[in-house]
Amino acid sequence: MEKNRLEAFSDGVIAVIITIMVLEMKVPHGADLAALAPLAPVALSYVLSYLMVGIYWNNHHHMLQATRQVDGTVLWANLLLLFCLSLLPFTTGWMGENHFALWPTLLYGVNLLACALAYTHLQARLIRRHGGRSSLIARAVGSDLKGYSSLALYVTGILLTWLVAPAAGIVTYFIVSFIWLIPDRRMERVLAEREHRT
Image (tube, rainbow, N blue to C red; front, side):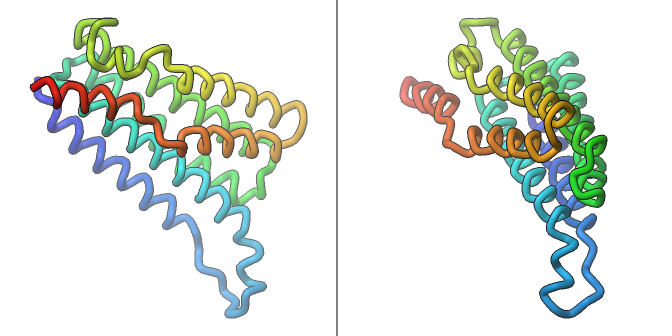
């Protein structure tokens, strides 16, 4: 099967997720700057989730550039990723509205971990679909140190939220986003090599 519909559908769902998140930020009733203060946790939650969704969209786009076709297992793996991402507006809103209380922040961390696991699963399905470890995607991913480090950090963030304080978990999740904001040229490098050969 061609990948075009999967890309278009995924882009649409991710755009809706971001739209829902921003709509959860309610306009304050006051007209002075002090009226914005209670919105600080909501805004911080939004910024973190926006970064996360943007990172997933960016990496999803690059990964699909290295693919030629998809099959049923890839479609289902992609739907699983989109399902996990679609829960972010809820967990983001709950966490922000409750000023990073324990249970909302814990659930948010579990949601982020689920997104990362779903992305890893999708990546594995695409590698298998395109010939295993010799495929273009597999060569681009390599040992996937960033991916596995992210999984470990999400687990660490969940544990820190539970055992230390929710703020420690939030700091850990921001660290993950900063790791991925550093440009990752693996996929672009391999794609450039393919273009050069053709």
